[in-house]
Image 1 (cartoon, rainbow, N blue to C red):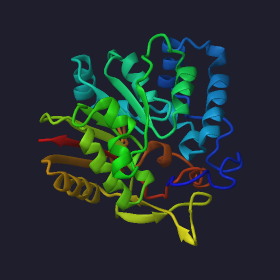
Image 2: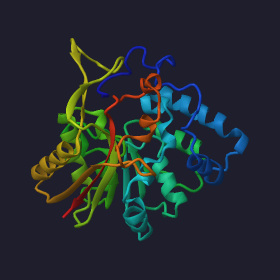
Image 3: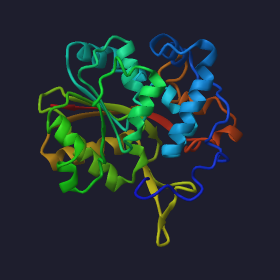
Length: 311
């Protein structure tokens, strides 16, 4: 989705995915974290969010930024969060949040009792590190140098000598989370990213990759909407939307290429009462057709939860 400069007009606040007002995005969990962890005055929470969102929009106008997805704490909604992720972090294992944006999932881990020493974030834009400290107001508590700017899709020589491999090392990270990340790319680049992630994952059996992303019942290569669709020279950008079966095949292909035995699970699931029947993301299921245009998603979109375990 991003292999060049910001598309013309992308920073306009007229796009339907730039939400001018907070609605359901400011959940009780988000308010609690901002008030109790970040010590933001309750009366200032909304203005604080708007200010940070607009700074993040200025770094790159991702639709997820316009829609305040940095308040959603996707990792904590994963079925393995309480049963595996938190206990393993509390026992001293390491975690890399890839495509971290403002490192919201890491702050939720800390708030839930995980130590900070082995938590790392990574994204393409180095500017996110300072902005994450500004959002969460924890520069004195969350260690510096744990936000690693790097390009997971760089050519092999650059990736091998890049910040992730130099800082974390190959085959050293116990848990890697990739929430709302792979679905930004076409199939070829998803496979490339998957093989890079496997190079970072610990060699120990039980090492875990997990996350969630937009999925569909029938897997497809899907064209991006303007202004992100133009790939230059008349070409059009696409992203690959997975079904559980196609997502499993992707990681089996990556594991075979890397010579690694993997156990892959991918299911449509939305935690919460009444949501399992359809598997549709609750933020999509309960909105009108008019509001649905604010998402990079079609009516058949589902939330795909997954885990990949090194055997």
